[in-house]
Length: 271
Image 1 (tube, rainbow, N blue to C red):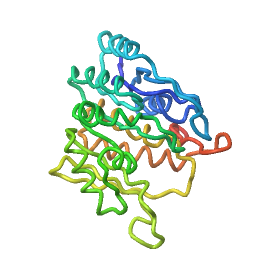
Image 2 (cartoon, rainbow, N blue to C red; image 1 turned 120 degrees about the vertical axis):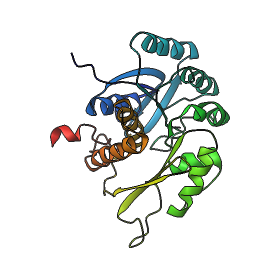
Image 3 (tube, rainbow, N blue to C red; image 1 turned 90 degrees about the vertical axis):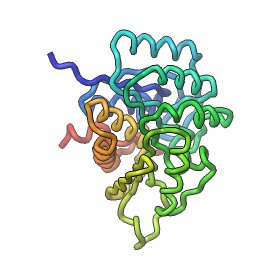
């Protein structure tokens, strides 16, 4: 009997299905793993933005985690929306017990600019959550939120990675998709990410796609990394495979509703 690798997402829900645990579970299935979830918050969310968010009690988060880990077990974990200091600290304590790869996506704002992390929780993310990470996957806005550094060009990404690594993750994946695009300049045709552990560097480039429907990109990438780690990849292998998967998902992103639609998590099954 084939039992797929088990991956756990600890994150919030997106009622529109494009990001959050919905994106995580779709990604995990698409990459041949069994996805499980610990729900941390419920959002009222669609293609136009987040209309409301309600976090779950820490006891509910802890009970879900224990229920899954103690019975089924996990081979990798990915975290997403953890809105409050209490939830960040609770999840960090739970993750510290595990001996499996952990991917921390330090979600700060939604694709539409809606705040998903209280400012009071930032210190707990820095001092409690990031030290548990095998890989931390901040985008450029989250780098600034956590470190105060602005990343305006590719050359700034090394400094950003060093600042994130100072908080304790083993690897930092700085996502450069939001770098300003200068027509005809370096990076105009490609999206670059930097993966480093402070010693070795991996610059990952992929074609930019002229598609505004990119809701769920960060959740999808972090979940893909976790899925690949659960399958036994090294961190550089996992991130390269995840980058390839999310690039295809962005290329296939589709209109849904009146705003920004989701990436296509099932693009590989459609050839």
